[in-house]
Length: 353
Image (cartoon, rainbow, N blue to C red):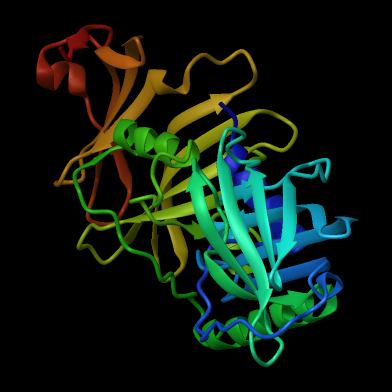
């Protein structure tokens, strides 16, 4: 498994495509007779609240006339700040529709879930607003429910993005240490459970990821603070762990350009200055096996244990402790002589079943 999610997010931020599901507040009312031509064409709906907002969304809809009272078309919906993509890479048509009583009735299949089937209608309300409204749906869709569509205006979208980004930078660039506004992860922490929750989220089985992160990409101050001191890997995501200490403890993901890779490091800092770092997970190269074969835990007293895991049907059946660390009062990682303390050899297996 590669670092697909982070690279996907980076690509979407660079291209300015950010999408999610948002509801519009309006009283929707049908009007008198309107021609079908007023509903076909390129439409879009978007919301943008800053680079790190999970409420960011863009919905792009293309409808083309196929007959006197029929249409074909497609949509592209990128959801949850780029974490969910319901689009075709080839702009394939997935929509068919008929025009009846001033309304386009659409049926379609999904791109995110190819087996998903859905229905929607597009119509004008009093005042001229064009409405997209979802109907029946089966399967996983990442589409807005009921929103006002705008004629595709890419220039206005990018103008709004630049305006909001400039306001966001102005509001946070007041102190030398950039404020990291993210829910802290409580202790104890189990990286294997973290991986499991991330997999469920990536597969669309969970609508929300319980572990919240901050995106380091394009944040020059965070990129500088968390720049790798160990190799040429680049930081991607930051998770803050609650310690109750004066120093901060962060779990930061890294990747090496051009190589399938995912590295996690624990990093301590104070006032934006890094104190120490510890690599606790490393997956580099195509020859690596299942990344669940490595994990680590952090106890309530900040004891860090690193494991090699033996798997059976994707479940851990045995663990080998390969390292133990503590964090001293100054925020430095101190290696522990776990073999002597526990009376065990480092190669000895700990059974978990």
